[in-house]
Length: 294
Image 1 (cartoon, rainbow, N blue to C red):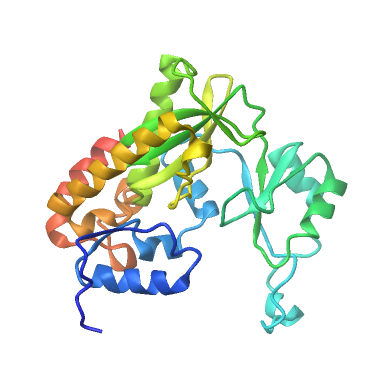
Image 2 (cartoon, rainbow, N blue to C red):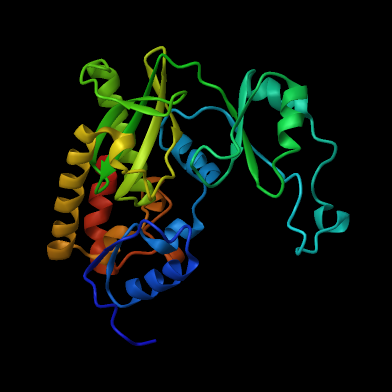
């Protein structure tokens, strides 16, 4: 248990699928290793919490509702008494009136476009919802976008917006895809998201409607960097930027930098408890958080 990790920096691209690595990486942090991304926060985080934080920080977010699960794993002892504090029946029409029609039904955590449904009415919503057990889902406003952007992000503030076709799941090499104003807002909001949540390797998706970028998905701590999917052009940029990030963190990184900072940015006080940062880093972080919040 006291054995040194043997690494100055580790880039985590697998612990969400192999639990052994998640456990090992937490131990590595304890031994002073700089892990990208922080395994403690990644374990705790979810998309609905992300949306709630970003609304408070001024990022445009589609209207979103958290839904109770349709069902539960067979080995979990859940009965009606366990759920007695939930309201029933659910007002499906009211939920759709709130988020609008059509709407998107998707998991409150997870990725890879799994278990994502576009629904146009209550009947389609119920049909899709009935397929979602045991996952916890969100119902979200559908943004009828003109442009869609997926940003590669490195070290919280280095943002690379890329044109993306979500229907074809295809990256597009187009350097004049956004207006200067929309591009600046995308970069600013992506920086706010990463600073608040602590991610140094991430992809952040925006759907742009009427000149406003709405943050759709930004919990991607092990983003797809596969060469043929992100195009050879962007692959070369990603390899270069990730290499520079890792070298910098090996030489200059402080483990305290890997923790989220939403507490500071929301004015709730200095980081404490589970999302805490080392005291010697707090003064520097507070100043940076003030700048990010403006």
